[in-house]
Length: 260
Image (tube, rainbow, N blue to C red; front, side):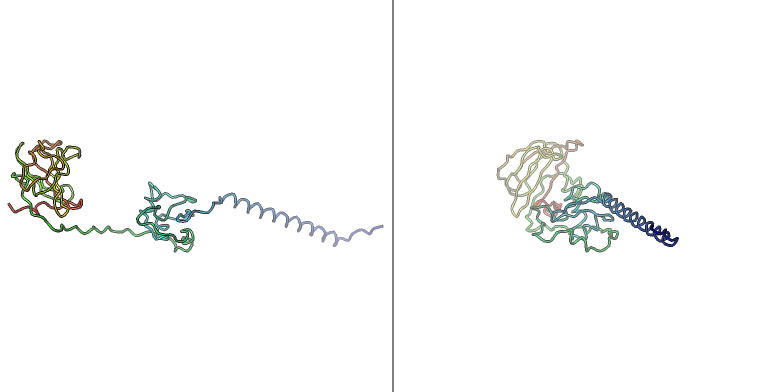
């Protein structure tokens, strides 16, 4: 006959069973916590070279700085409407698109460089530096294209030429010898317009004419009558709007015209 277990043996056996159950429960809790963490953190695939996946705490300025780019470039490359609204998991292009003049030729993945970036700080606001004004080169002498008074002078922004007053039908003259490269009314805001191409890359424009007297492709001499003065479409003011440009940049016509 098997002897009955002592009180100490019963107590020890009970403690072992409790310890086994506690370990099993703890292991179950650990497994559940791990599964919950995995479910709450979506798994993303690798990002292509030249791209970066947004992480928690990232800002567009920090991502740009870590990848030697400007925040404005990232906005343009990724078609973002609000640079302050990027989402965790979002993939951003951090290098210029293929074919861009500033595109780099190869290099390591931007996500690798982002791992070693410094903690993000608020990007300081930069004061834009105005570009130095272009200086006209190899100026050509010109004559006044109309005889009336100057109504408005060049300021480089709202007025890229000079406005010369007069009466409807007053003659408009070529300021310098050249070739007619445009004669028509297809340019909005200029009415009937004549444009002449001159030497040294200069171009003159004569706007708001009542009548155009030359055709495209024709050569004209300095002082030749090319049009008749008319009025503007919007205000009905009789005047000539005259511009001088070189490679697209407008210059003050009075720098080319004789003093009055």
